[in-house]
Image (cartoon, rainbow, N blue to C red):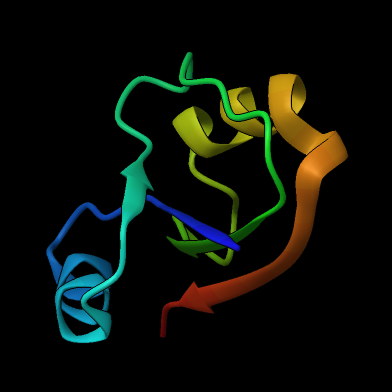
Length: 72
């Protein structure tokens, strides 16, 4: 299963690096994926979905199998 991720401060990027897996980074939100994936992302504000992740999900939600979130 593919890993898709978004990282602003580097925390999620650090997780991806430690996993040593092939992963797709969400940078603009316009990325496309045609296989099942697990999303690893951060939160904005008070637990909000980052805008680029929301845009990505609008076009790629049919293959989403799970979400892991890094935040405080």
